[in-house]
Length: 240
Image 1 (tube, helix red, strand yellow):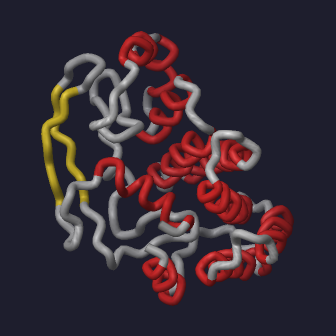
Image 2 (tube, rainbow, N blue to C red):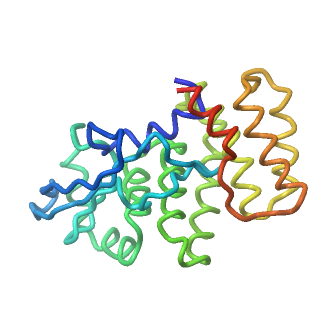
């Protein structure tokens, strides 16, 4: 799988039902592994026609579709349900006053970021959770911007992390340019994107198109979110 799609697969693959050819809504009962609370969570499937933004948010679906969260203790499923959980460490933390205070009123992906941080998760994955939290709070620009800034901090830190893979590095590096643009750091975004345009590992057609599109908005000092163009979407689809 090409690097630009790896991050989409990370989000799409965590909790997506098996069939996703046509947009559908799915509901299923989930039992919280922390306190035993049972609730029904609803998913929206992703169609192959779904659009993406430059910050890799899937458009036309709810940004909370993939993150089940216990309505009682606020444990957020930060990884696929099928993977084992370190419950001996997690349970005391989730039920602690510190987590209950920090998670109150926060979006599911913010809670997932708290959990990943507590468990010592890699900065790239922590940053992606904060990025998703920014999508979940776009109706509150101040809060969304807070999460964008934190996401940028973690994803930038990932570039020098020993835990990051070569493919993840390519995603993180390009995504840093987009998040710098989104947060008004235009000169940093320009320097980063121009540098990567000539760097080995960023010469695929879709990578070049992605970086150049960011630069076109940087030149206009435009920090608004933007969708990929139809041509870019074609390149993304071709990279699958």
